[in-house]
Length: 248
Image (tube, rainbow, N blue to C red; front, side, top):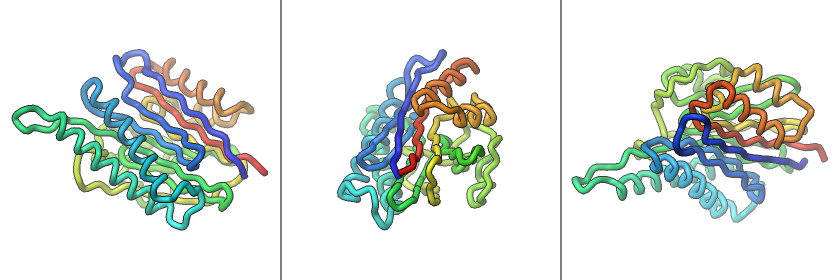
């Protein structure tokens, strides 16, 4: 199987900066989305660090291979390294009294091996991963919020899981983080959506499913989801990464 992917990030209609960062690394079959937290440029720095560090760590950990025996372990180690980097950046940006700049970021990471027919993912925070398969939309990640805690270890996460913006875990906030990991087989036609809460918090699940089910290229579907987020108020940065598994 082959895959096609695209990424779009928009500042929205209200924010003065775009604190989301996205990454499509086809050579590693690695797809990332991070939503930064903190004042002004701090959030941008945190989310960009998350993307860059995870990409580099995955590349080092797998020697560039997209088919490795322990993708979950590679993602876990990469996210831990990103957390350390953001913590260090916050300490470096701290005030003269020894305080720490309050920067942080969410992360959702997807690693695909179409040859092996497997997908592995990991997340910290409330950026989400969905899968659209055979006309049905599934939420694969339970937010690291109080509302999401009840669904952390269950198979069926409700599509209407509320957005609270009250994170219990994020990169750069604590030295002790525990990414939630998942894995499943992939099928031809599967469409994976990574998105920030500027999309999932503003666009109804039914609209997301309808757009993903359209007979259109991934670029057109991604642009349409961003338009829906902007039309719904655009009060936050809006970002999506779309990855579709193609047949042989």
